[in-house]
Length: 143
Image 1 (tube, rainbow, N blue to C red):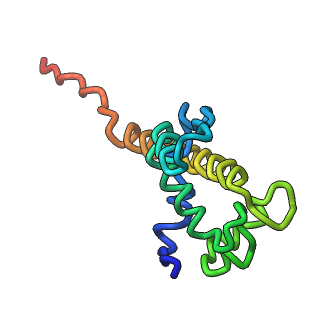
Image 2: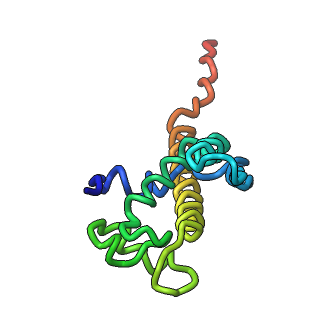
């Protein structure tokens, strides 16, 4: 029986927030024929960020048939994922691969970061204009 995951936990970990970093540029360590598969998986996961490990785990949970890609039927229970399916499916093959998910997550994070920066700048501008001290009044001189 497959483990259910909530939409909030899934939405690809806020579209798998900490996917970036140098660890993603590295290829996973390949196992030699003499090494057990479990040991190879552990070694390759050691080179990944915690976010990448979580993202891969969640992708595998959604990939119910284990073909390494997500179909519309595999994400239909998650409205936000279903709505973003066409945008994430950049090659138009009707499936979303893990690489397409990574690219889509990076795009969403960049948009979110730009939006947060714009909000912070707007808030800083508002704060600056409301807290700018006025020049003190000139003292009155009496004759």
